[in-house]
Length: 159
View 1 (cartoon, rainbow, N blue to C red):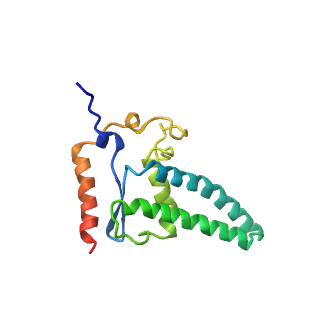
View 2 (cartoon, rainbow, N blue to C red):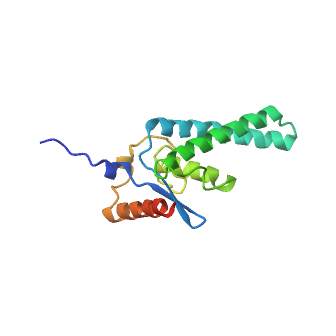
View 3 (cartoon, rainbow, N blue to C red):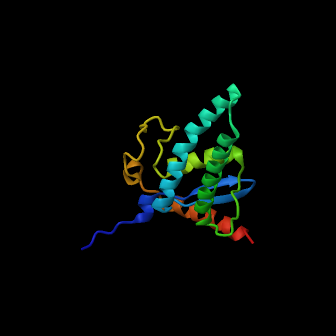
């Protein structure tokens, strides 16, 4: 008899971001290409921000460096938008501004198992060390259905 693998239990739940009384859903099952793109952009963005902050303090931040940073932010925003559009194709721009940008990116990468969760002291700092299916137990059907109903509320609310 063949073994049945229930991907919904392994992949985890979608991430629902609640802002301005609307809910926006980022899928737990994004493509490998999008995951690597987001992770790569994150790996570039964090050190660049620290470097730019230091240069800004010293007063030697060039226009060229600012342009590189803005381009990287734009590329990251576009990649995040691509993920949100998997659940809401009508979404034309990110539903949050600068204040939520890094939080959303980090939350997505933590949820997808690419970054260690800073709120979980038992989890190590190694990235991608343990497959998601072994990190936490499978979600219950009641929590899965609440995630789906959240997604439906968002998509049904868009006209």
